[in-house]
Length: 186
Image (cartoon, rainbow, N blue to C red; front, side, top):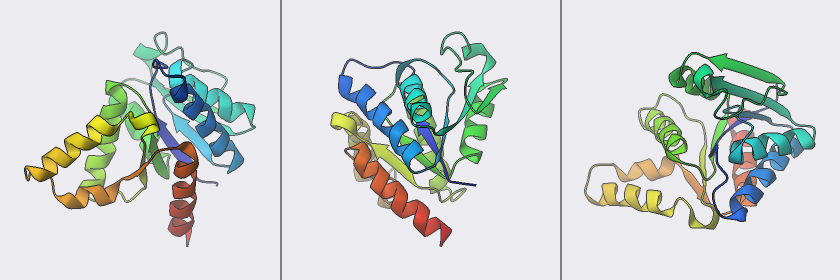
């Protein structure tokens, strides 16, 4: 089976068209590389954009959504695989266990929570999957500054930074993914 990329991103589009553009580009990259998109199964915001653009280019999609968000996030039922869970924890677990790498696009509190959970798991050596932060137009810079602040104040070991790769564009994310996923299979 080809590699699967878990994309964490917003159920909203944000107020900068660069964010939607990045989501569309990410979907195209996933399809072009014959990777499978694993994501939160929404059909709105950046989630909907990354899924629709993956499908538009013939890519494979795997979506996981908790029952209570089916209406709010408009569950995208035309995916190759569409799973409904009882809760958010199950959603994240299924998404993560079905992926080989994680990409964080712009998003809200849910995206932050998903990112920090997989980062914590990496820190605890529960997994060694690549985690890529797509810092589109500097969106994640305040979060990255906060991580630096925690390191400066000795709450976090500086080695945490070795667990993430920060990129500024989707093209850079693609290069990192190709490199990481190639290395992981060798």
